[in-house]
Structure formats: structure tokens, C-alpha cells
Length: 243
Image (cartoon, rainbow, N blue to C red; front, top):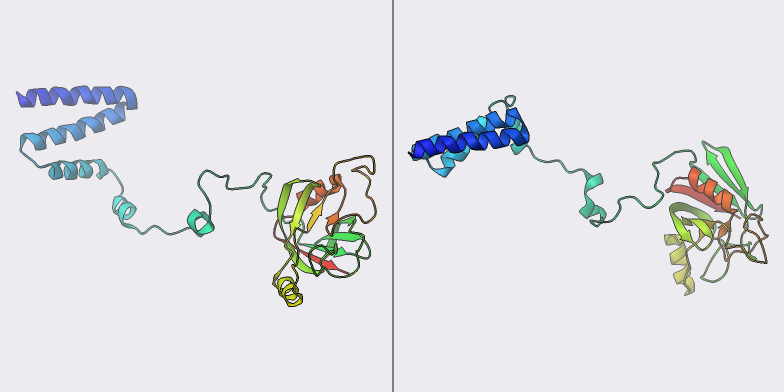
């Protein structure tokens, strides 16, 4: 009697799975359930059923593939180790406006007294801009609030899309040398130095007309130019600011 009901159950389960998953699933389910039924009728343990089922399901795999799949050590991919990288689940992996590395520019050079900024690739000029600085363009930045543009080699490290000055590219000032010098003088070095666009238009100026030096120590170009600048320059590009 038990065998009769067991076989009926096997047939019904196989038919249901076949309708859902297809003919292949029907054959596999019928084979596994039939094997399990035999083990039960013979008084086999649950361990024997599981072992027999696993053996049946993996018999068609290439030799050694199943063993390697379950036994080989998993190699860590550092680029996707979000714990080490400080990534947080639920946040976008890439920032707004992210694009792949373009490699169109490998260095940016600023000549403060010439009011000129050059984009270079393999020491050849890709693009040049006329820039505005502060009303105190001479001299290196030393402290917070001195309205000077720092001099030295830094990195254009990230794009700031929600800038008051339209869009901006952050410069990695202060570096360790700047911090140590400020500590020696007993002052704060300041920060948030950017290459940015123009502030919102008002009666004093227009965003498409570059005024003479007006920033607080940042480097300003026109809004269409900062769009172009961001499209050409990758985050991580070095910028050298010269007197």
C-alpha cells in the first residue's frame, strides 16, 4: 500500500514540475523522488537519501567539475571587496555623472601671472583657458582666508556637481607640506580650492563673460568651458600651479 501511494505521489510531483519547468525537470524530479522512495521503503536513513540524490544529480557533470566547484578556494578580488573599500550597501557604486577613464589629458598646468591654464597630453597642449583668480593672485597660499591660489603639484580628485559656481573640479589642497607649513606658522591652511564656473547671473556680471580676478583663491573659467574641462579631464589627473 505504501509503495502504491508513493509511486502515485512521484508521478504527480513529476507532472507538476514538468508543467512548470519543462520536460527535462520532469525526468529529473521523477528520478530523484523515485530514488528517495526506494530508500524509504528499504528503511534507508535521510543521509542515504541525500547522498544518493546528490550522486544522481551530479553524475552528468564533467569529471572533477563538481569537486572543484565545491572545494576550490575562492580568490578575493580587491576591486570588489566593498568592506575594505568602505562601500555601503544601497549606495550607488559610482557618483552622479561618472564616466569611464578617457585618458585625453594627462596633466593640467596653471600659470597664475599669465592667467592661463593648459591641458596637456604627452606634453602637447590639448586646450588652453583664460582664467580668473582672486584679487591677490601673487604669492603662494599660506593660510585660510588669505584669498591666494596655492602653488605646487596637486591632484584634481573629484567633480562637485552641486557647486554654487555652476560645476567644479576639486583640487587636493592642502597636501602634507602645506599642512606642516601652516602648523609651523600656527595657522589653518584652508581648503576647498576648485577649478569652477561662474556664480548665478545678476546685474553685476553675466555667466558667459569672464571678469577679471574675482574669486576667493579658486580658478574660474566660463560655464561652457568648465563643462568642456570636466569632459576632458579624468579624476586623478595632476595639476601643477605655477606663479
